[in-house]
Structures are given as structure tokens and as C-alpha cells.
Image 1 (cartoon, rainbow, N blue to C red):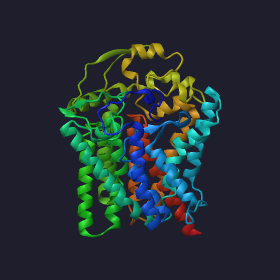
Image 2: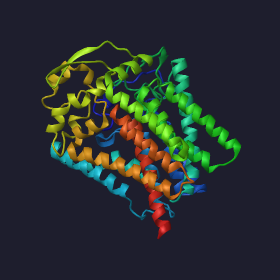
Image 3: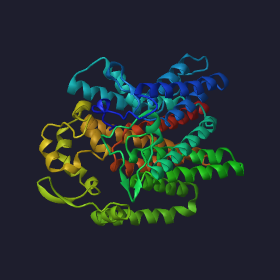
Image 4: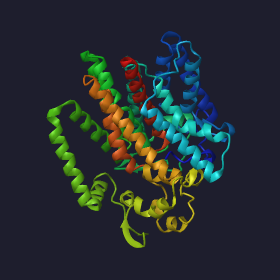
Length: 470
């Protein structure tokens, strides 16, 4: 599901940067820690927890340390640090009412440990690694919220970060210089070349390893604009929020990635329909027509969008399920299920494990010949397919349950308090991410970490609601 880690630790970074990998990691952690300590003293553990985690999203995902063979990024380090501080603080309250999302995350952790134990054997490090991948970002969001008022403390930090990311994206695309690489060292080029361009523009990668992940990270954080807009009713704050939204969306556009931009527009449309009943029929009808046209003419629609957005790649003839199929880099996502159908069936309840799916191309027995004849399918641009290959049918089902539970939680919170749109906006985003985005891109940890953190925020709100009802 997340970005393969096997080959990333061995990638060579450029020498022309201000800090090395470890020094850059240390600098980032120190800067975040200073802000966290200040807020911990002045505002308490909850406010400090939320702000520190948000700040970590502004630092590159490729700078890390590797104790015991476990890659630990700035985001993971921050989560460990702030949760330790939260637990040790006199006001840090751990025992909170459980939610369905808690059980959903626990199921993902169990799937991870069980699958890898079957495929490569159990090791003492395995439960910790699985916890760090699934539960840690979720928990960091879960305990950042004790009530709806805590959203007001986090929202300005999130909006500040996405404005910063949006500006960095525009700067990188227009100047062809990535500020994050200049300061912290070159990003790994395993997934995309350094100067990839489209429509005559350099694609912005920001602090992530691929432009599409950068756009998805911005998109995942954009519902917080709704929170800031409603929390502070002054005209000045709302004007600044609108400006922040434009900057963030421009940042997504300058990644020159189709999926994030379409995802943001679809989530915005759903949020408007949720908040304004008069828009529901027109927007619903428009989406129904668009989906119907795509289902009827998938290849034609895909090729047209590709041509309009700088694609139009040369078609290739590949063999899928015993039949010759014409495809291209844009059409590959339409054939992912076909190319991996047999592997998905043979994956069984527990899949092939993390080792077999931790690098591209996948090391699945019997698939080597397929990869050679279908070179375009080296990466698995579908989160559900990749996770099912990794953790089996049970893992794929657990991922679906996680998203359905998160969406239901968001809408439930909104309908309890229709005057507060943020949970509904987040639910709308998750509908788009689960039903559209993750069918076109695997869930890299680059944006998967903020996504799990956001799901934790919803869980914290649901737990706080239960406390108020008791």
C-alpha cells in the first residue's frame, strides 16, 4: 500500500546541498521540537501535539535514519516524540472512549503482522514496524483532538503549511529548482526522473518523491480550509482563507498531475453540495453524466484527457490475460485488475507479504514474464490491488472497511452538528480518495501519513462526542 522501502535506503543523493541526510533529519527534528516544547509549556500537550505533527508535513519524506533496519522519517520521529511527551505530561489523557475507527486501524495492524509472519517469519521488530506504519500516524491525530474546539487550534497551522507547500510548488515549477532538494539533498529518483516535465512545465515534487504524491498531500489537507473559514468569522480571516485556498490549489496544479487536481475539484463539489442543498441535484446529475460517459467510453475519455493535459503517449501492444491489448501510460490504470487478476486470486487470505511487494517490479512468483512483456505495469497504480497483493483478501477487505468507517464517521459528525462543516468536508474528501484517487495511484506513505493522521482526527472527534453524551 505504501511506497516501497526496499530500494530507497540505497539510493544516492546529490552532493550539492546544505545538509546531508542525517544532518537534514536532525535539523528538521530540532526545529519541530523547539516549536513543540514552546507550545507544550504555553498551551499544553494537546495543542502542541497537533501543531508539531502538522509542521512535520513541510519537511522532505526522504530524509531519515535507519535504526534496527527500520527507516524513520521526520514525520515518524515527530509522532514518536510528541506522543511520548503527551503520555508523560500530567494533562495527557490516554484513556478515551473507543471508536469504530480504533478497531479498523487495529485490524490493519493485525493483517500486517499476520501476513508478514506467514510469508517471512515473525521477528520482534515486526509488530513495531506495523504499528509505526498504521497506528502511529493515526494515534497522533486521535489524541490531538479532545473536542471540536481543538480544531480551531490546529486549523491555522494546517492552512499555513499548505500555503507554504503551494508557494514552494509554484516556485519549483517556474524556476526548475526544488528548494527542499537544495537544502536537504536530492530526492530519490526511483519513481520519477529529476526534471520530469509536462505541458512545458517542470512538475513540482516538493518534499515528496513524486509529483502526484505532492498533489495528493496538498489535497488531503485542503478540507482544513473549511474549518478555518467557519471557526473565525471575521471578513479578514475569511479573505485570507480564500487566498490560502487559491495558493494551495495553484500548488496542486503546478505538480501537473491530473489525479490530485481532479480529486480536489470533486471533493470541493461534494462539499458544496453537502452545505448547500440547492446545488445537490445539478452537481449530482453532472457527476452521474461524467461517470456514465467514462463507463461507456473509458479508452476514449482517458486518451482525450491525456492529450489535453500533455499526454498522448505512443500506444503499446501488450498481452493481458491471453489477449493482445492496446495500451499507453495513461491507459495502464484501466488494465491494472486484468494484469494482476491471477496474482490477486492466488494471493489468498494473507497475500505475498511486504518483502515481495516492497519494490518495483514486484517479486511475485510467476509474474516475472508478465512484467517483461508489459513494461508499463512495473508500478501498481492502484492502492487496493497493491494492498491485496501485500496482505491478501483479508487485508484488502480491511482497507475498504477502514475507509467506509472513516466516511461514515465524518458524515455522522456533520449531521450531528450541521453548522460545523469540517467533518462533512473531510468525509467528502475521503469519498473521492477512496472511490477515485486510490484507483489511480498507490497509497504512498508520502501522503498516506497525513491521510491516516486525518482519519485519526475524525476518530478523536467521534470519541469526544461520546464523552459529551455520557
